Length: 346
Image (cartoon, rainbow, N blue to C red; front, side):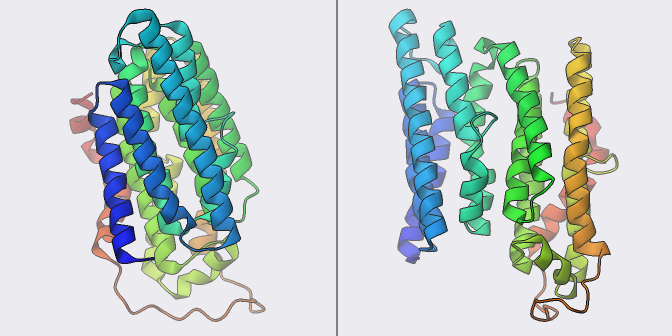
């Protein structure tokens, strides 16, 4: 890809995200979302492979439909209330339309079908952008309108997303699809707590972004696209594979690691809100995610490939691991002890 075109796409991506997260007016937020969508399309279709082109077309159609719904929702609210302020969303029909639009943009169940396919058709770095940066503007809009949304609808979407993200991830062999379903399950956790404690939703998103970035950067270093390649990658980067196991267990939410913090706080908050049943269901459904994270961790560090492997022998990479990956790996595993400091900000 032409360096100038790449620079323009990345700058537009940053610009679109900044416009959306800093706007108070619906039209500005919508403009930012549109800039974001148009900026990521060249990055998705960059490989010139039929799968990449298909992924770009699917992404464009879904995001265009969701943006149209955002616009329709804000216009119908302005028609009734005369307000274009994002925080002044009060018309019930507008709230419902906005929830559907943002669910489409994020890939929440039942609007998730495009997401694993688009991630599978993209390169690992583009998949990283789609899983983290592209989720930030819609999450911000949800954060700003959280007081107006329907709790029952959001809880239903959240439980369905966590369940489906766990179930569908079980039989996947492609690492990008596994990360896509992992993302859907994590979005369920963010959505269920949105109305009761919006700051906790943002904290969960930040920690999810941190851990997912680490996993994608590690997979990109070892050029791992499917589980069979992951089995042979230990010869390339033994230490990095060991830390990948820790990051995956952190994503699963196991106690001594960073990923335990948001799940613990969300279950605690749901119990305070007398939603014990929802908290129990979410905790049980996270076991599904734990299973496929454990399988990934098992493949990356514990299994040795059989002698009759079809893959070319992987040679040890002498190039040192990049500094950002090393820092992110440390943060993904070791942030739990500073949780008291984080709790004071909530």
